[in-house]
Length: 268
Image (cartoon, rainbow, N blue to C red; front, top):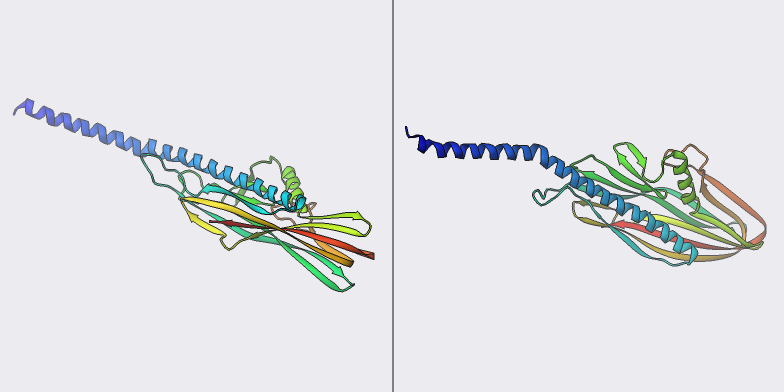
């Protein structure tokens, strides 16, 4: 047997063995780590997008109440992540907007004619699918953002339940504000957050979360009664806030101006 003829074969086999070993180590060690790192970066982008959208909602409410202006604001959020140059496979995700609470304002004129203004609150959530890291989602409601994992959640911006309660109380109770210009003229601001027809989107591409706001005004004379629901923030806080009803009876009829800020949230 010619040793010189066998040597190249052995060399090729050794090269193949080294290549297979390197590929195995890459697939079992480096690839999962790289996918996880890319997914972590993606979830940070989702977090930033939802936090910006939370600020957009606050700005839309403030602009509607203070200047009476409506408008459109939007943020982009990538639904899937985890891809990089050598492995373009991506996870996916779902953004869902759900109406989860209601409250009402009722103005009574002439002693018996009721003028009702119904408002809603919404919950906006992002939930990943086939994630390369942990299944960490995000939910916005009542003016704050929490991270979610299964049934568990933790606030992003607040370190204690007291701080979270304070933020939720500030947000929800600003949705109905009653001002008295003088003894006979009352101004009321009320805000409604609702889900539009496009309230769910899924996939791994770019999604857009948008809000459209408009402001309406109505003027009533000879008002004898006013009732409105507000949120009882003194009750134990578990993510939902119970409501209380405030009733005001006027012995002398007053004039009431109702300014309603309507904000519609959608995702495409």
